[in-house]
Length: 168
Image (cartoon, rainbow, N blue to C red; front, side, top):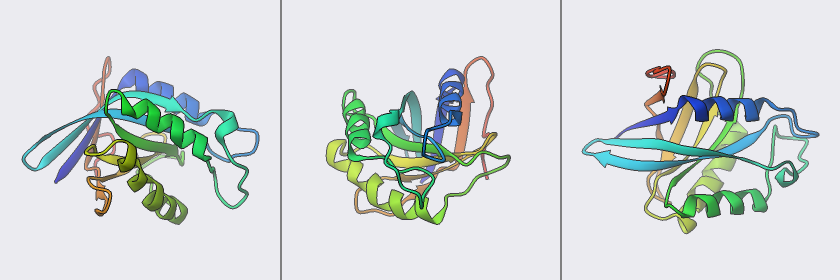
């Protein structure tokens, strides 16, 4: 199945600005996107509705990783995605130019927490995305016990239409 994400330019700008802010002890910022999901045979389209930054107090001091967030951050994000029912996408940035990749820590931890989103928001795809300064990479789970599938295309929509800003 081909998975594509469309995000409004204004939401992308807000998200990038938030993720670029320094934190007192975390090396990087984290946030969440909520998206509507629509599908046709062979394709899933995620339409981003909004961005929810993680509050400063919801980070946990964890020297071995770029950022760790506590259960309160996940609770807030899941509550936000519950009504209207939305796909929940965990997002952070690695900065730099070009297509980013997930770190080993990203893949291990995301492989644990993303499937747990199905408990609160079942029957919606769930995922994680990592941004660079000009691109993105993402994975989406279609079921709690399934394997993640790569996001094939990201499209920025709005005043500046920019197609496939991270297509492989």
